[in-house]
Image (cartoon, rainbow, N blue to C red):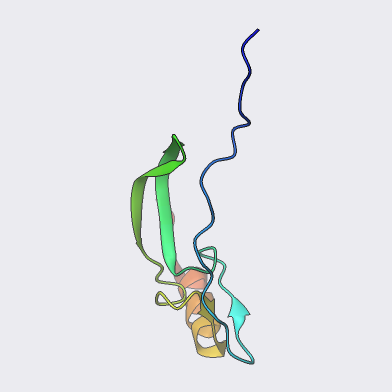
Amino acid sequence: MAEFAPAGGFTMPAVKDMPEGGHDCDGCRGDGVYYGDGYVNNGKFVGFTGTCFRCSGKGWQDDRDIARNRCYDRHRRYA
């Protein structure tokens, strides 16, 4: 019987430092990069990536970012 390695996905990128009063970003994983539709192939993400608009690529949100995102979410229309 063959030995199988566990499917672990890819490694987490480095998380940016968050200043006092900052909040975790709910759009990215703390690295400022948004991972869109895609999949993991041999430990590498294949798909759309781009700057996270919810935190402006900082990796964390301040109170102004949270207020902007709440307003956007409130008025967003779903197709």
